[in-house]
Image (cartoon, rainbow, N blue to C red; front, side, top):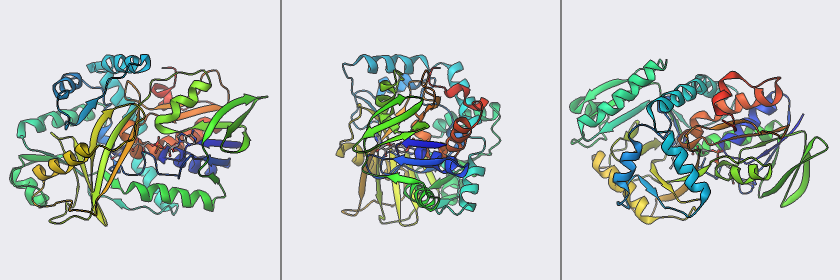
Length: 411
Ligand SMILES: Cc1cc2nc3c(=O)[nH]c(=O)nc-3n(C[C@H](O)[C@H](O)[C@H](O)COP(=O)(O)OP(=O)(O)OC[C@H]3O[C@@H](n4cnc5c(N)ncnc54)[C@H](O)[C@@H]3O)c2cc1C
């Protein structure tokens, strides 16, 4: 079977890996360089504990409170667009308690094999910089931590077996000496991991090349069409024909699906990061600054701060105020680590996000042989191996795996 994959981010590359492993003849078509979309400068957390979808009870209230503050973790730039209005309406409807819990249960089920699959990828020789020090939620206000304790209660109620240890102010600073003495406490989830995402995509790409997968870079897909039961893919390269196609073009997937007559709600939820060797005491754990909603990932040769969620269409332009806000929030939680001057790498990426916060993984309705996997929002690195493994089953098997039912495109 001859499969064409449009988009070489974490989701496309992981899917290519499992499809090639199962015997498919795979071609990855990427408009830029593989791994240089949203999958590049993110925090790299592998965190099934964050399976709760973005639309959640209380989120709208919080969003409205933040609206006037240009440095807040959430920024919505209203656009005169019917699609955007529909997306916002869908998001608002998804914030109810029941839908949140259903979404969490569905994503937890998708995450069930995440750690096992990451271990398997490493055993298969895919090199990556992986850290197994857990995730530490940190708060400046002890009362704020209860919100995350409730999240762990919800996770347990949904069948998640991971443990979490609550620490008071003294305990948490002893456990992570890089923290500011003013922090009020923390919760450590020891089973969580983080990976330097650039090493994950580079490792997958090297593996694909070794398996003989064709990788076209600098190849922008302009059109996909079905012709006598096969799929023709056209663009800035020699036209290719495939038995089946998989659309993993991240925040841009909606445009390709439209050509197939399928409309899905998909926004690019922009986020920023800055990465620097910095000066001062480096954290030893991945940290979540809970009030600021900023992630902090220590890598071998630097520390990355990542966060903010900005709804501004497919616009990737930088915003100095947002990057500055990341460094400011780190100063409130860290004792003396500073990103430093010129050697900081600033980055922005678009998280592909559906109004209900759940990924789209499934067949394209009415287009036999076409599939899509996108909408992973905050969890594309966490969910890349699970998505890839299930996409291979979906595209090569007789029927869709049950666990994918909540993620179908026509839900
Ligand atoms: C600040 C920030 C922090 C984050 N932190 C985490 C985290 O800690 N853990 C986690 O799990 N997730 C995190 N995420 C989310 C994660 O980065 C995304 O969910 C994930 O990278 C999405 O992967 P993707 O392959 O779907 O998209 P992308 O990586 O964007 O890949 C899509 C690719 O398709 C290509 N493409 C688009 N259109 C075409 C076309 N027409 N022709 C050919 N190619 C095309 C693009 O160039 C791109 O390379 C974070 C995101 C941000 C922004």
